[in-house]
Image 1 (cartoon, rainbow, N blue to C red):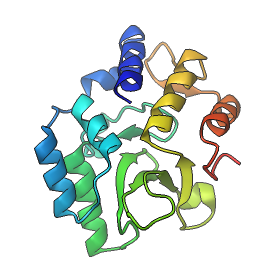
Image 2: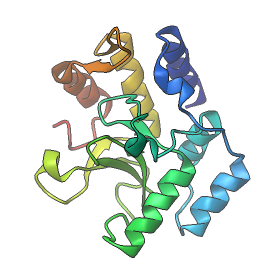
Image 3: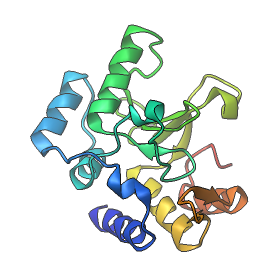
Image 4: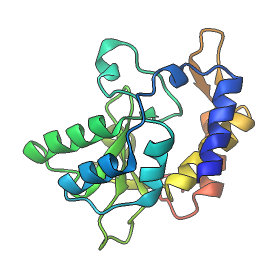
Length: 191
């Protein structure tokens, strides 16, 4: 996964993607594991590796106008923002359980990684979007963190994701669906 993520970063540097300036400082592996354990979540090395390469964006950027989209579902948020969101959920809605919502969008949708060792979707990324799914159920959207990164790379390489002159992400949704379906064969969202 490290090589795929490095490839993605190279693409973002080449197009001068504004998300690169938004990522927070990287934390060490012990701190990341500690935060996940404090939330009583099983560890997923691919998620830890992601946070060791880039820190994610501050989740509060959703509210201060500085949020930058990396892909069609938003951007991945810092481990502190993700665990804070999960903690808030555990005190209110209680929808995430052993899922860590580490991707957020401007519309309020989230993508979580399933960290329940007993789950048939462990390690898969699950979309929570009542407006898209017409349901409050989670739906699998990416087969793994690695497949999510691979999908984003392919979408940038084939110009499905592109930045306009104002550095705003533009998306060809029809082609995105085709690419995503081909890479994430086990995920229901693209079917």
